[in-house]
Length: 490
Image (cartoon, rainbow, N blue to C red; front, side, top):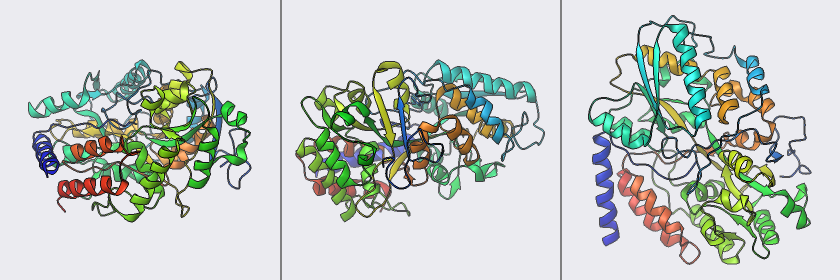
């Protein structure tokens, strides 16, 4: 009862903060073998491959993201300081999609003239110098062609700075917004709901549009995305006598290979004890924290079965949380070679390249659940526009320009993000074929729970997951169900 009262007070506090324009942040983030039907490795000529192989010297894309918006695309408990620039072909190949929806060289993409003379401000959470330089170059190019100016400012603490700006009525014209915060900002009236009016609105992946919709409105344009996939240490894999044919396509196969890879100081699988990893298994099991109508379904039979499966891996010793192997997050455990597999997003590629260059690895899509359901999680930020901006037309035109296929491919080349528009998919996979598992995942990914006042409930869920090995899955989910249903008002 005391716990429920404590959470009730925290949820109420979150709602008050949202009404004032403040926001909390979560810490997630932000992710079949070639012999199996429909799967292939990076050596295959088909860009739609579901498995990718690379050594870190060949990895050309990464999304650090842990500093972006404080929430949506980075490692839990760790960060990558290297985004890992892509190959030059990424920019060259982008010309093939430059004529897609919304593409243009100056006016913002639609071809319609944009009034000049506006001075826009843009606040963002940067993953590093590469992202900052790329965004400065893009906004300068747009500004030069439209006779507008854009002041680009990397935030020290994006959530805190936005909260202060909203409360003092000094919000920047544009800013990054994590999917977990869009509902808070929208409910508080801080966001301009503009995305449906963009000429390229239909080009964004549906899963990303859902992440940035609130109360039936598509609020802000997704700037890029990440999904989770399975990283496999190929040297440890071969040492255990396995081939591409053993890459797991199901939970049973994952349990088998994780046990086989567990030997000595090496654990078969390590990942963060966080909803931003664990919930991928809920989706694969046919469940989720909420249903399509936004109603809490935390303690469904499907979710209990999924969490019970993970508990069995923990008690068997073939799955360990990173702290149990002396690491701060799954990517570090994998990079140090104390975990043969991990579940992370494409932001790990840059960390492996810069911090653990000797590790050879393969990336595959996550295995399906017991009924064959595929599932992963998507992490993303959008281009938020302040409801109080004095230059909404110019701000929307800038967003349209920044989300064109050619500009998104330039961002992919510069700091490793995956484009948020479908018309850039072919060019991206041609430039970065080893990243196909991440791109393929968006077709069946689920986004984070986004609703006002749920931040503290989800943080409590994370804390309970840490003790899953000794806890009862149903008890954990029953607790979160009560609190989430209360926070959602149902």
